[in-house]
Amino acid sequence: MCIIIILRNGKNKMLKIYFDSCIYNRPFDDQTQAKIQNETNAIMDIVNSIDENDYKIYSSLAVEMEIDQNKDADKLYKVWLFYNSVKPDRIKLNKSIDDRANELLAKYNIKYKDGLHAAYCELENIDYLLSTDKLFINASGRANLKVKVMNPKDFIEEVS
Image (tube, rainbow, N blue to C red; front, side, top):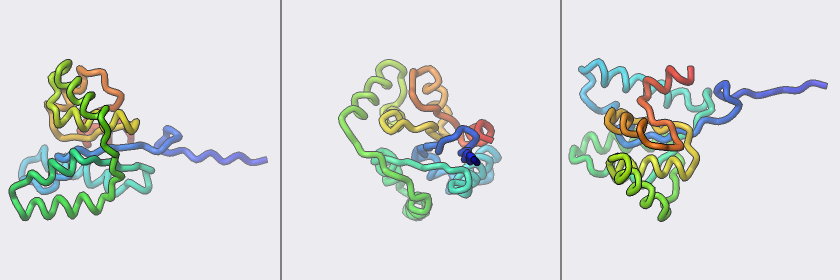
């Protein structure tokens, strides 16, 4: 008898990843800064390895609304093209998301929009919420979140 075990990401499961809106915007920011260029490279590495690493990417209405707030029409167009190329699964909105975002704001001073991202992730049992927003990443470390919030560069280091 032969038993075949398929390991996914060394953790025997598909990783569920949520990109906040700054992840979709980062490739179209000023790439002359090393930090921005490094984050962009990490994002593109993740996106280019979705299938081989068995990642599933998620999004939400909150991400889409933030993307739509971009006043630069050219950048907005490019961000939407990138977003659509990633083909994220959209998490459905429900009342608990708003409640949790308000709780995170009140208890941990996490901005409401960032709290929405965290709440969507908790609802869908997402493994990683990726962001380039250092304030959000730091604030999430103080909160009792059911999702790991981290920079895409740190994510690559953690899962490699």
